Amino acid sequence: MKAELRTEGTAASRVAQRLTENIASVLAGKREAVELAVTVFLAGGHLLVEDVPGVGKTTLARALAKSVGLGYRRLQFTSDLMPADVLGGVVYNQAQNTFDFRPGPVFTNVLLADEINRTTPKTQSALLEAMGERSVSIDGTTHELDAPFFVIATQNPSEFYGTYPLPESQLDRFLVRMKIGYPPKDAERRVLLARRGNDPVGALEPVLTREEVLETQRAVDDVRVDAAVIDYLHHIILATRSAPTIQLGASTRAAIAFERAVRARALVQGRDFALPDDVKALAVPALAHRVRIEHAAQDAGNAAEAAERTLTELVRKVVVPV
View 1: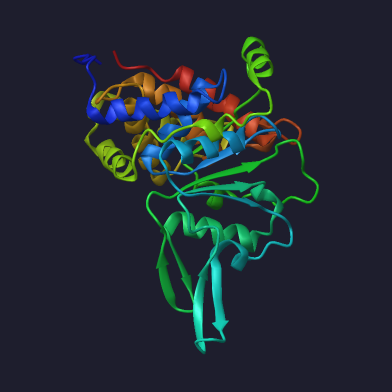
View 2 (view 1 turned 90 degrees about the horizontal axis):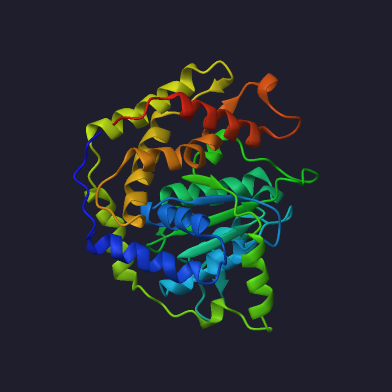
């Protein structure tokens, strides 16, 4: 594909880059993970981080909320957590002799749903429905969630006892699944040398307003995606449905979400047009959790890594437009 490359970028792309820089300043050596998180945020999606404890999941969520001056809540999911603990509920107001709605933690802008696979399917479903509908219905009354609304859910891939794995229909609520991983050796050393009991996120200043965030999210629709890029994306989707090692390929809804993520990534990279590189970079994080791998192709107990390897190989075989 031949595209007229413009380097000046749009106002929206400059906003996206400003947000990325601010968050990356407190996550040493994790620029790629930050860019992916910002891509999901600007696309209006939700993020699933599957990684071990202590690699910066909470820091990422707090830094994003602080950078845009938005509300932030963290909710630790446990086996005894009830839907009302997430969504809120109606309580009796004795002084007024009325029943009042008391909003739960989901009524915020950035919600860190920590260890989401440790709670029951009923509670998982309550959160995931709110994520999809952007509203909560209690006792016949619908309560709209604040905009923007962004969920970063986490789960530990190395722990299986006492967990409730998310089914495909629930995983589909997440635009991207990713890992943060350990920082590079030099970056981790700099963190150790610089840290003296201070909270780096606490020193962050907002670089965007709520209005700028919403305007940038709307600007994602204006990113140009040429037919050749759409065809490349579509060929990858079709390949997931015909690959012999994939039992269940990507759906049309997955393709639509994938395309929107491609638009958002272009802004994060400083462009107002999408390239095949955007498609290639997002194919695995946007699709691996949306496909089901044949059991024979899975590692023992690690379907996620098998899916990522399968998608990586599949994307490598799809012809890139020039």
